[in-house]
Length: 194
View 1 (cartoon, rainbow, N blue to C red):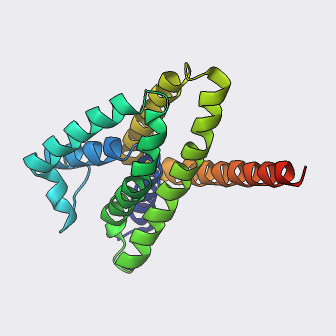
View 2: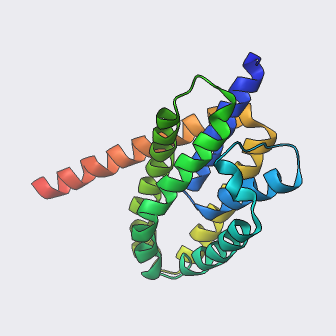
View 3: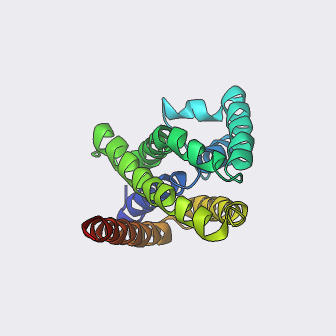
């Protein structure tokens, strides 16, 4: 396998796992549909289960539910608590399924990388959402949620079409998320001291 193919596989894995931190079901559904209907993605066992009709149907139903509840103030925070487990798991599956082009990569390492990527994005999203709710009295939640869905869709598609670009974009997004989280933690500590 050549270097560009390997880098593309890692780029797709990074981009898809990162987008799962925003919405678990968008990248899963996109990967399932692209793998089912094109040759752009080949999923090895056990990840090829994503291409079955019952999984695609379940992902579509879960996506509709997620998109509806994430637009409602207060309900979106409850959804974020539930998604604390779902989004990192989706990131782990997506990373492991798409990093499979590198045979030397440990499956445990791939799963862990996916959990960390999706978990970091999810944590940043979950921390920012109450701030958005408070600053807009809940009226901005639907717009922010819609923008997150658009970003997750765009990132997922780019991860498949231009995976090397998504590798660098995902690293940048994770760095910004860590910076935001650290800044918020310092602000909380400063308020606690006062």
